[in-house]
Image (cartoon, rainbow over all chains, first blue to last red; front, side, top):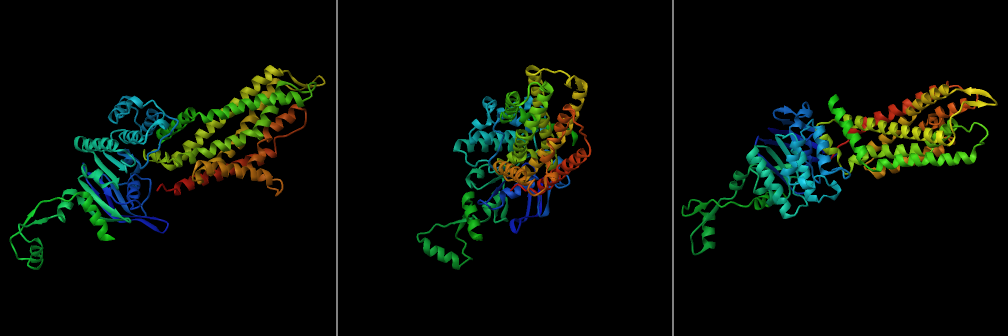
Length: 269
Length: 265
């Protein structure tokens, strides 16, 4: 559904994203992981049409984004990092404004969106009175206008307390599983996304280090050896030197995504 | 395309109405008109030409050559820069609206704001002029210089012409707003540039090329006509139209070029 083919982005002489190839299929809950400044937001901003790739192309639903920008963006809902709204308008007015720009006029449906993100009771309050968590939820409601097939969320849990993070992630999990929406999240909070995503890509300094299905990636390097022995050191030496020894068995112990992420980053450094 | 532009303009007008800061401009306009009525009572000779008509021209001339250009620059400078930081522009562009549509909607909303300010000023001036001074024929020593109808026709024409130079002021503000990184730098730059231009224009002989030099022309001309002077619209009107149009074209073209190159990291 979303394809990035050889996408590179330069800001003057700085290469923010270097030859990225990604394929995100329908119904995927895809996490783009990486430290701050890795190029996550740049990739998401290119998918949402805010930035033009220096080279390469982006396909949304098998159509070139550059040639079909308007229609493609209608099928995408976006939550930007540190969402911004008009402080002198209420939450409801802010969402209505964006809904009209998207050509969507169903006030009842907008009321339901505010219900989904638990903001209906505060929807008439000015946004300047909202907490960061409420702004994130309002941004999610705005992203859901017109029921888009794709949701792009840039650091949606940034600055939220554990309860806020839990609420947002639960909502996303629900959208992915129940409504089969394609969701792309960027985050450096590895633990947050581990529970919900099925695909990941790890990016650092603009380069995709690893990507694929989460289960496969975690299994890939994580087979452990369980050996029954009275002398572990001897056994270890023995196994290292004699690969033909049959008396050991693998157990399917999964690493946590956090361990995997840190290992991958360290390998490159 | 058209329906989206329409929606964008509607949403801009909605934001204009909801943002209480914009009402300050209207209040300032009204206060300035009221203040000028006291000013006129003090400085004008009550025996001669001190009619409602001369008050209208005096108060509007004072307003449009002093406070209103600054107010319009302040307003226009905030239009785009206030969307860049705190980055509400991202939300708009992510709905599928183009950057050009965004600028067009801002320009049209600013033009509507200008018309509202001009209408407020005119209505207030006419109302106070009528209450405080009354409307008689414009005459001197029993000789009628101008009838009611002649005055209102000339006034309306001059007011319509005035819109063009004030739109040039707004276009200049929008250009700075597009270039500046944030609201404060846009306002500082636009006011700073305006003050510098006003300060040096006669010294370096560029007054014929500065948009603000022509603001007083239309109402000044009507004022001269009401005093029985032989004043003519041309040839100054041609310079006025050419210079104003040039400022509008250059400012808006620069705005479109800058916004096209603008990247949101």
